[in-house]
Length: 183
Image 1 (cartoon, rainbow, N blue to C red):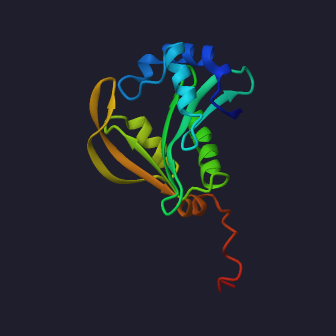
Image 2: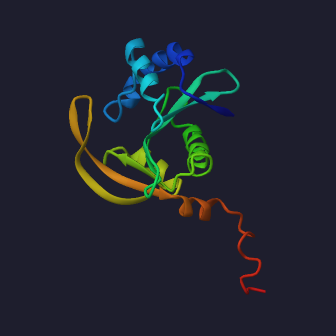
Image 3: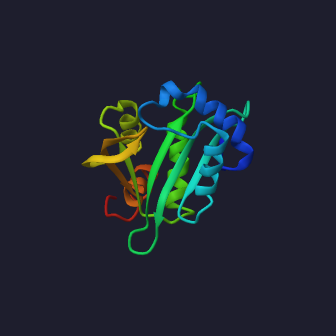
């Protein structure tokens, strides 16, 4: 089991230690903060109105499972955000992140009232692509030299999920059948 918490200063020591221990897992895909200074900048960034960072905390031992960020939240006609995420060792590959991301998606489409989420993933990151596909994200396109990671511009594939897509996946099968003329 896990709980979601907004990233905060009290996560610093555990986050930095987990990011350092997970460097081999994350490279070359993502570069989370691995120093106290970069972590403090991270917390400051995610205190802005258009950014949200959730920490997934193991309720049994208090360990950090991973993080999910909603970046560049835009309201108005777009109602959208970019989703970034990563697990920490030893939780990676143990299906925690699927449940964590589903909880954040619920929050994005529910409490935050967003309509669309995008996840931009490097083409070679098969585990990440499988993860978003298992949650209903669809491949929409390819963006060459899209994002600079570890000092290099990297190509990304663009996956997206809308609130309607999510609701159709999570709605119980019995819902929607009453009154559709299928009696």
